[in-house]
Amino acid sequence: MLVESAELIGRLKSNLYNFVGGHIYYNNNVIKIRYDQFEECIQDSLPENHVFDNYANVLTLQDNDYVQPGTPLQTCLYNKLAYIIGN
Image (cartoon, rainbow, N blue to C red; front, top):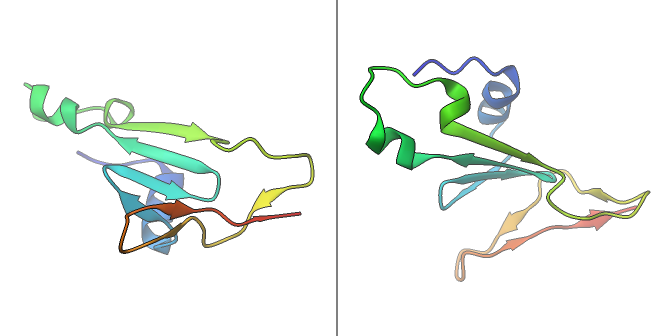
């Protein structure tokens, strides 16, 4: 599959994300990778929008709040994510 989304390509190249359980977490956004689409695929190629689901603003923030760059942080022991919110 050819990925054409400039945002996704830039995010992957930057390495400023956490990949946990088929999800790419960065800032206040999540990209879900739809592995089920690969299993059901009969064609040679899938459209990009069938493989990646984008979710923006996953945390409810106050007016002046923002997610700190470089978060969420992932704990190695428990596989949990921690967001640092600034204002």
